[in-house]
Structure formats: C-alpha cells, structure tokens
Image (spheres, rainbow, N blue to C red):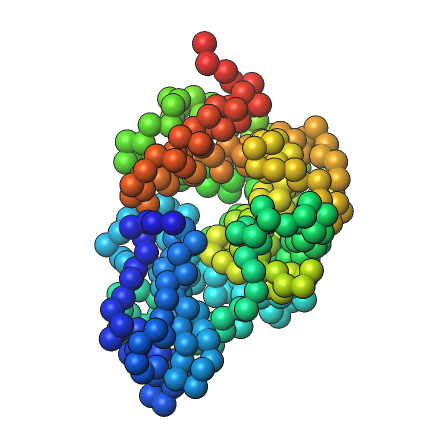
Length: 328
C-alpha cells in the first residue's frame, strides 16, 4: 500500500543502521540484500539479509515533516512498549526486538529491527485457504486476543498517558481527536461534523458499563497475523494499542458491519459469542470511530486513488444508520 508516511531510506543509510544494530561484520555486501515489504499501510518495512545470511526486518517510523493523525503520534514507541508487555505477561507469540534506536542520528525517525518471521501473512493467503482452515486460524486469533486483553491498566487511555478513570471520557475524546483531524484538513465525510458529535453524545452513556481498563490492540486484523502449519506463529504491528474496552478489537467489527466478514470463529475463540444490547451500542460507536478513521486517513496518507475512501464512505453511512441517524 502506497502512503506518504512511508519513510524510505537509501541503501547507504540502511547499512549504517544495520551496523549500529548488529555490528560492522554483519553489514551486507553486494546486491539483493534488501527488499521492501509492501503490504503495510503506515511504516515502511524492509526485509534485510545480513552478511551471515540471517534475515531481519527493519521498521522505520514516518518522517517528522509528514502530518499524521493525532492518535498516530508516537506510534513506534507504543509498539515497542506493547511488545514488551506481551512478552512479559502473555504467551502470545510476538517478535523479539533486536535493536531499537530513537536517537534520530542516522535517520529522521525512530526505527527498530526484529527477526524476519518465515510464515504466511493470514490477510494475504486467507482467500486461498479452505474455509475450515481459515476459521481455525480466526478461532486461534480470538483466543490470543482474549489473552492480550487480560492485561489490566491503571486507567483508560494511551499507553504513555495520561490516564483517566472514565472510559466515556477517554473514548469520546478519542473520537473528538479524529473529528478535529478531519476538520483541520477539510475532509468530506458525507456528514456535518457536528451531526456525528450529536450521535456520539446521544449514545455515550453505554460506555459507562466499561469500568476495567484492558490492553486493547484495536488494529489486530488478519493482515497482522503470521501463520504456518495450522498455527499462529507471530502477531505483528502493535502500534495502536491503548487501555480501553476489549470490544473495540477488530475481530468484533463484523458483528455490526457484515462487509468486514463473519466474526463467528473469532468470537467463538474469544469466548464471547453474543453481544448484549448495551454491547451492541458500544460496538456501533467503535465502528463509527473506525469508519471515520478509514475515511479521514486517506487524506493524511496522500492516497493516489479513491478506492479506500469510496469503500469506507458508505460504511460510515451504514454505521450512522445503526446508531439511529439516517439522511433526510
């Protein structure tokens, strides 16, 4: 996926980064030692073969001069912190971090190295898998996601803080940040921004049911899942984690928006197979937040085609209708 947030570097800079991480004796020579992993949406990621043949991945944060959405600021620091929590407190398979550099000395952004995971990306191969195999993977993902959500926080909000005891306060603030991002860049979301605010306010009481902050990945789609031989071997891309309501997780989206796929296997693996009336309202609010991001981020990413925007805009209308607001 092409995006102006991808901070590509020259081979010379990449070699300097490799030397800092692994030492001069492992810096690759010759040709063919680097290739870009192109399916990501935000960071640039390179697959690199070191001089001794070991393969690693380098992720580089966006350049500082590119404006990102409010919730994306400091995303790489969030990912590094989340990886540490998951390695320490869960059995969920995540990549180790070989080296991280936030000095901005070799390039203009944070970066880190991790081992290359020799496995299939579930989001890429899922369409070719037999239904029973894909469902088995999604059931495993549900169980892994539940374990991730078992990590408790001391308050709701970003991993780096500030935290707040009220999930309603935090989530409505998160939505307001997204709306402010859209207004600042004049993004046409198909609705008056204040109309969306009215819809959120009308249903915000449902959020008060959430009283225990849990670690939430939020962005855990099948494209962030690496699989091999019938098992999930690694979960990648943890840069949007926060302490919030587990019902925000991507695996639950399809319970309200069918175009996101059947959530049944995920929910079965998670152990949450039916949503209460209040949970459905909360999940619809989370769908609204998601669809606002999918529409607004197309401007921030500098998309050169309208495919994502054209797909997401009708889904935003659908979500507004689920929350009781339809066009006159």
